[in-house]
Image 1 (cartoon, rainbow, N blue to C red):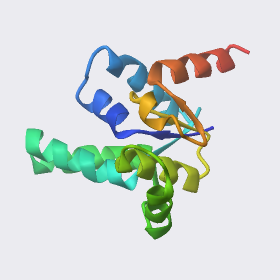
Image 2 (tube, helix red, strand yellow):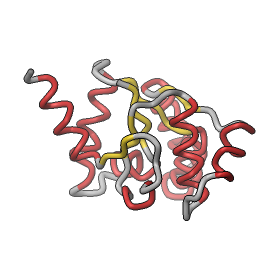
Image 3 (cartoon, rainbow, N blue to C red):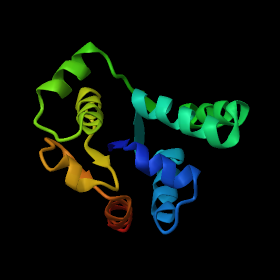
Image 4 (cartoon, rainbow, N blue to C red):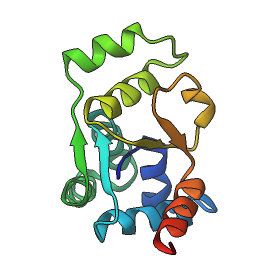
Amino acid sequence: MKILFDTNIVLDVLMDRLPFSDSAAELFSKVEDGTIIGYLSGTTISTVFYLAAKTVGTATAREEIRKLLALFEVAPVNRHVLESALALDFNDFEDAVIHEAACHVGADAIVTRNQKDFKKSRISVYSSEEMAKILASKSSD
């Protein structure tokens, strides 16, 4: 199963934002053990670096990005993705880009904390808690 993680989910883990970080970290472990294939949008990588560099410094930010790149595949943000995002009727362009990057790589779902922002999604959208429950039920079958 291919899952694209929204930026807010990555930040939940990196910043240990409780109570959200527990289920998000559980999903990261599912990527690490190969249960799911995790994707991050190219824009997520640059946003996380920017925010991390401001709070913990450039050297630590680079190390965190290296860890993310070792764990996740990257869904590219290219001309096709951007033009497709512009054509969507999403309220937020960044969410449209994340959606189109997910579609571009054939993701089965997007995991986000802002499901309402993806109401018009063509693929399934879950919270980290919902996705963790789905994966737990599949593993017990």
